[in-house]
Image 1: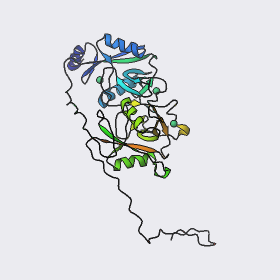
Image 2 (image 1 turned 90 degrees about the horizontal axis):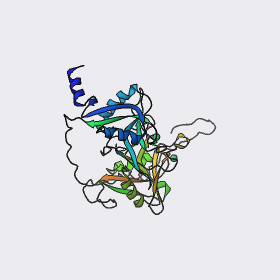
Image 3 (image 1 turned 180 degrees about the vertical axis):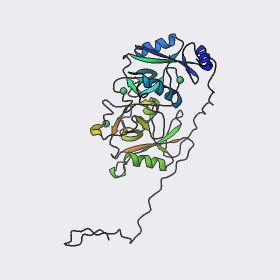
Image 4 (image 1 turned 45 degrees about the vertical axis):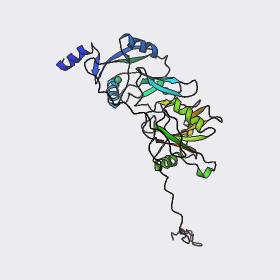
Amino acid sequence: MPVERARVCVVCQGWDAYGYSCYWMEESTRSWSDAKAFCSEQDGFLLHLGDIYEQAHFTVTLSGKTDLWWTGLRARGGATGGVDYIWDNGAALTFTHWDRDQPDNGDGTCVAMTTGPIGGFWDDKPCSEKHAFVCEKARPDITPPTKAPTAPPAQGCAAGWTSLPQFRDCYRLFHNVDWSLKKSWGAAREDCVSRRAVLVSVLSQDEEQFLALYSKASSKWIGLKHNPTEGGYSWSDGSALAHTNWGPGEPNNHEGREECVEMVSSANGTGSWWNDLNCDAHQDWICSISKGTEPVLPPVPPPPIPGERLPQCTWPAGTGTFLFP
Ligand SMILES: [Ca+2]
Ligand SMILES: [Ca+2]
Ligand SMILES: [Ca+2]
């Protein structure tokens, strides 16, 4: 055994070392909470995937394994509708690697990783299912670099935009009673971008409840979209998918044509839920912008020049041939 590997083995007391952590691959299967208890008995915690490098390490490690393996991720909440995904070790969810069509909230609230040659993806499953799992603990000999503390959010929003002190963004609902002013998901996203904003990402139940009340009695696009090729859902601004609020039976990808996600708020705004919908449907939408960034007005298309006529297309009589003028 190479000297360095042997030294690390001693440091990790027989566990595998990678990056700043030691890992134990436990092949015996347990429910999620029994797996969590097993790890804490070893002074560890259920696997916390902190970034794409740690994820890549386990994608490779699990390529030769079978079935599913529990991670330390689970959904919390649900009583009032939405759920927030949290790590067992208390770390914030800053990175996600959801499997195709996940998280679907359909059958469970604990998150396992798939295995095999194209494995390593995340799927929410019933917590009572028994799976193998990974325990993690910090390497005792090295510590990760400390990150600079994040500054408290700036305050204040531009006219027409709204927020609460705890949020980092200001929000604006574009609620158009006239159908012709509503937009497809892509056009809504484009409208937000042209204001220096983004189509809103809803990252916690706290934010969900605020937006439900703010946009009560309406259905509107949010920045969530399905990725048909890579699988999974993702936010248009690249935020981690750390919260979901699917309505009963959703996402159902009705007739295989629903790739974009709307939020529906109840009449009094005390409840809300998400539905996947055809991206071409015309809807209201919510943009969000970082506090401290000044929104701009989207460019207005130039008015038609008076007297200028669009070229007319004609069918010459009797020829049956279309002519471009
Ligand atoms: Ca970790
Ligand atoms: Ca699932
Ligand atoms: Ca749907």
